[in-house]
Structure formats: structure tokens, C-alpha cells
Length: 339
Image: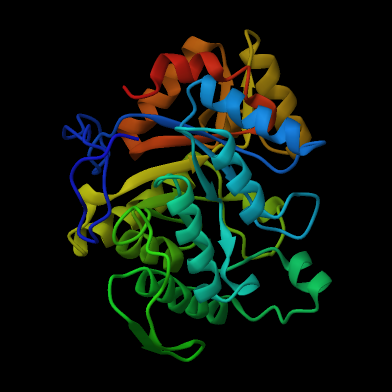
């Protein structure tokens, strides 16, 4: 990522942020960047090789979830990715605030930023997957409490990365004159990404994040029909409007990068057949898959055209695909990255 101007929080932004959108999106048009969501590999050697392959194919970032199921622990795994590469950025998508004290997470992320010469992004969320809490014997508080705690956690992370000793007195966290060390390379902190599907978290993201990820709604604590029902085009229109309104009121429209983690991806010449098959598996009408911004199905040319159209309409310039699509999606990356 080339660095240029800084946003209102002082976070470096790409110097290619450049023009006002000619579509319906209220956000400025940013150059495309692409990421891959990873979970694990058979060995450390293969994990590092995969990271180098992602970098070589032109992807900008590797991300990981933060759950207790079949995945590597994100902090050491992301550091391994950073150590194996020279330009690839890394982030959790996203760290669950409840799983680690935010002061500890801030120190780990700042250390990673120093060791990677400034290639870390801070993904943080309130936590949603109920099975994680059940397996760990942790209390699954109602959403409002988890979100309150996450907001405080984000304030702590930003604060302890600042240049001066930081104190904080909240309902959930208390910090007393802590001068965080090391200080991150990206000042005053690496870019923050917050993903949300509900109005409150989307509003928080618009006011506090540098990158806003639009997600399905996960109130049920599992990926199921409720979440799928909030991944339609109409639902995304509403979610983006919430972000835009909150960002406009905060005077932050120009500072936000819009992100989407796509889940229904297939590079294929049989777009109609593949969409029908996907729709059958998840129990929706084919039109839902065809129109959803969470889906990218078709030839390289069709997918590239869809991505461009969605940037114009929704502002999505930062697109993440799954590990299974690393190679098949690479021609789309080659065509669009940085444009």
C-alpha cells in the first residue's frame, strides 16, 4: 500500500484516493485492493509458501478469522505470513474483543507492525459465534453488552498505541497511565477495520474505523437462514446507507474505505448453472445470488464488471475472497488491483 495523506485519526491513507464517485455511492472512489481469508495449512512451510503465492499473485492482504474451531491462532499465524513476505499486509477479520484483554492485543499488534515495517491492519469485533463462548465456558452476554465492551476495547487499543501514557476508566476496562510499547510504525495506529451487519455496529464503524466491512447480520450466533437473508442486494443497500449517514454526520465520508468479504465465489463460464447450484444448496432463489454483493460468479470479465459496478454503487473497493479461490480469482486481481 503506498502511503500519502492521513485521515482525521492520523492514519496513513493511500495517495491514490482520488476522485468523487460518478455512481450512486457517497464514498470517494478508491483503487481496488484484494485479500484472501485463510484458516490453516498442513505445515508451517506450506503456510509460508501460500503467503508468498498470494503476494506474488497481486493480492494486497491476507486475513484470518478468530475462532476456537479448526483454524490456526491468528496472532502467530499472521506474524508468520508477514515474516514470509515483503509487501503483503495482514489482519484478523476480525479479532473477537472478548477473547483477549485489549491492552494485550494492542501490544501484540504494535509488535507485529514494527516487525513487518508497518503492514498490519487492526480488525476488531464484539464477538458473535456462540459455539466459541460455549466451548470456552465464557458468558455469552447479550449483544448490547458485548458491543459496549468492544467499543471500550477499541478505545483502549487506540489509546495505548498513542504517543503518551494512556489512562481509561470504563465500565469494562480500566487502564492507568500505561505507555504502550512498542509504538506501531503506522501512526498513531494501524488502520482499523470494523465489520458489522446491524445498525449499531455499522454506525460505530462509520465513526471509528478506517475500513468498514459490511456483513450479514449475525444476531443468532451462527451462520444460518437469518444471516443469509441479510445478504441480499436490498439489505446491503440499507446497510451502506446506515454507514453513509453516520459517516456524513461525523464528517468522515472521505476517510472510509468500504470492504466486503464475499462468500459465494466461482470463476466459471457457466454462470447460470453455478448460480442455480449455489442457490439450491443454501435454499434461496437464484436471483438472490445473482444480485448479492456477497457473490461473485461468472467469467473473469463478468466478475470484474460486477466488482466495478459495486464500487460505483456501494463504494466497495476492498474485496476479500476465500482460500479456495486464490488461484482462480487471480486473473480478476491482475485486471483490477490498484485501478
